[in-house]
Structures are given as structure tokens and as C-alpha cells.
Length: 288
Image (cartoon, rainbow, N blue to C red):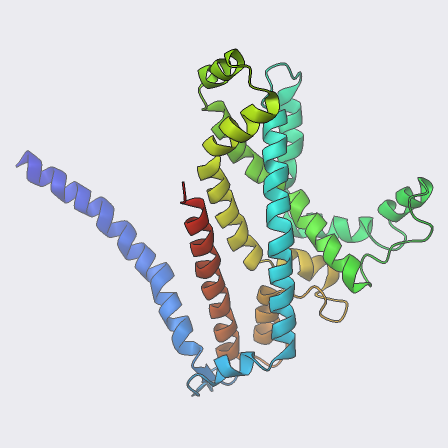
């Protein structure tokens, strides 16, 4: 009787979350795929098969959004992960004073409002903003950088913004992992005469490998869904230079003439990219 009761309790713990996940995750995914096979505004959707997916290949705005998203992913994610590792190692030093304050300062950007910090960045990096005035005052540049109206610098600004926002968040994972490494491993390395560089690359990095994989995958997923920063800082401009896939989905659904079927097809591109990049990272990260 006791064993049966435990099995029923265990079944309940499994069944309820499975039911909720199916209702709120898998069912919408299936419905979205069905919608991606239709076209038309609102309740006037008509079945068009895979025409929406064929349309993607000839849509210049979608191709631009795809290229921008992949560029942000390829540049920003490695930079952010490396910075997170650097800050975690520095802030884990036993001899460092005021570690709590420094950790808070690095982590603080990740708890700020996405919209609020995006608007602040927009004003900071405007033509007459503080950043341009500071750089000109230090004689780094001779004239203001067009952060918001130049395609190249607009991309740089988005990368700076999301790196500033998420580096501290990922640092916490690395910091937690570092604090769980047995100090005796480093003491043994000191006895063997290992340098700081050797200890970092041969002890720290290998032991951080699961966390590096985790942060890389989660950061990849987040970057592929990037929306708030380009929407609020550059508006996707200039000339679609910073538009992302998620922002284009929003435009197709609510800004332009609504075409929810086509928007659903675009959203499945994100699903495919998430699965693809996560699989590649897991394959690479799983090798000994």
C-alpha cells in the first residue's frame, strides 16, 4: 500500500507538469506550424501549403534580418562568454577586496529593464550624446560617430548593448562553478610549479566546460530571439541594418498588413536555428 501510494504521488508529479507543458508549449508549437501553412489577415486565413516557406527565400527583408541575427550571434556570444569568464576569475580571487560590491556592479545590468536600458543607450550614443562628447574630449575621434544612422556603427551599438546587458548574468554561473572547484587541485598544481596561465588553461577551463556549454547554448537561444534592443535603440534601422528575425515577425504581425501565417513561418526559422546551433554546440562541447 505504501509503495502504491508513493508511485501515485510520483505519477502525479510527472503527469501534471507534462500536461501543462503540453498545453502551453507543444500545443502552441503545433498550432503555429499549422498556421504557417496558411496566409491572409485575421480570421481570413487560407491554406497555401509551403508557399510561405518558399517566400522566405526571396524576401529581402527576411534575408537581411537573418543575416543581422547571425552576425550578432557569431560576434556577440563568444565575446560575452569570454568576458563572463574573465570577470568571474578576477572576482573569485581571495585577495580581492570589496568583491561583493564589484560582483554587484557587474551583475546589475542584467536586472535592469530591457526597454529602460535600451532607451538610455539610445540617448547615450546619440550624435550629441555623452559617449561622443567623451570620445571627442579625449581626442579619440575628431567628429561624432553616427551610432544610430550609420549601418556599421548601428550594428556595433547593438552588440555593445546586449554584451553590457548579459555579461554579468553569465558571470554568475561561472563564478558559482569556480567556487565549487576543490582548492586542493590548485594547491597540487602550485606544488608542481604550474604557472597561473597553465592553471587557467589546464585546470580552470576544463572544469568550466559544462558551464561554458550551458551559457553558450542559452546565449545563442537568447540572441536568436533578440528583439528589445534593435526595436528600442535603432528601430531596426538604418535601412534594416539592425532588424532581427523577431522584430520582423512583430512587423509582419502588427506593424504592416497582418499576415500571421507568414509570421508563423518566420518563427519556425528561429526554431530550426535554435535546434541547429544547440546541436552543434552540444556536439562540440561533448567531445573529450
